[in-house]
Length: 111
Image 1 (cartoon, rainbow, N blue to C red):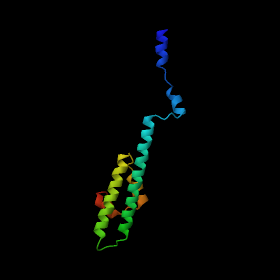
Image 2 (image 1 turned 30 degrees about the horizontal axis):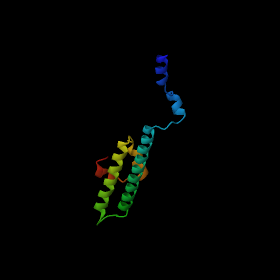
Image 3 (image 1 turned 60 degrees about the vertical axis):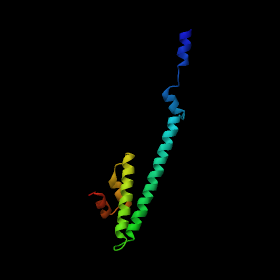
Image 4 (image 1 turned 30 degrees about the vertical axis):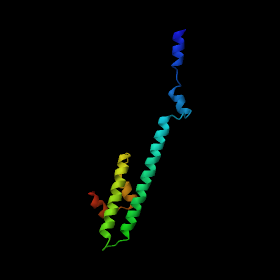
């Protein structure tokens, strides 16, 4: 009888059932919050790239162009790094989507 009681106390819900019931564990909640923060952070970095590229396009040449180019390259580099940390390594799609100019990519060492 004691063996049966010990076996009964160690029973747990099957994993397939807990998945179907959407049981939220502390780990699941933490994972969700981490993914949410990553998405927000990536969005902020993307807006920074957009602003820096817009500022660069407003400087056709002359005074302020070098600073705008540096700021754009810094923003794009930070965005690329953040995407890579998240496992997103397709730079070609980002370059096309944001219309990143060759001079910015050259400043990053890309070809």
